[in-house]
Length: 238
Image (cartoon, rainbow, N blue to C red; front, top):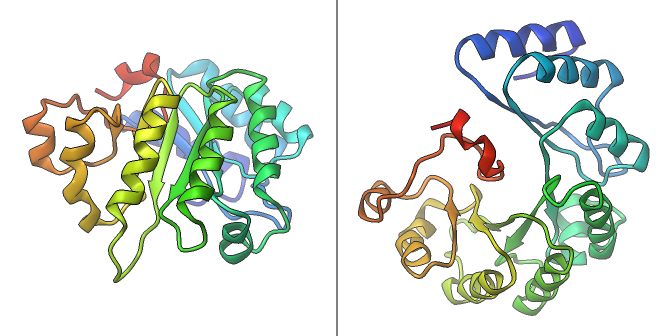
């Protein structure tokens, strides 16, 4: 849903909350510098709303400058969904930005100095623009920052099929490196045939929209929210 003014934004939040919505993701396009612009007025609306309503706010912020980090933190966002590219070529080919992977890692580190739960790293696996070695290298660097949760995404390859063995190796490594691992929303419907494998082998703690039979077979707890939310907010979505 798109809003243009802080008044529209506040009205929309109140309207959705009355209808039962408790979680809000702020997203949109990036600037040429690779980050999402959000005005002080919009941030003030969020801070006021959070003060009066039990809710969860997250944001796709990108390569956020220091001045905006502090403002987002003070507005009361619960966390930032932060994409970490698997390779420099990924950034050049898909984002057309001048950054390197190490720039993203430095930004992630900066966010995590505020709180280990403030940024949730998302890593794209099985990309055409990266190798398995690239992905494992970035994974290890993310792990050194000790985030509360790691989210794996699998690049959509149409009509090609994803490489199960390659994804398996990264998730197996992630299982060893992180306390909590999620398989996120980006993966093709065809790749969901492996959902039961990830769950049965304990490679993931959270999995977004698995097949119905997987939920039933493993008696999975269903949380109707983004896979990045902290556990202490689960009660709002179950």
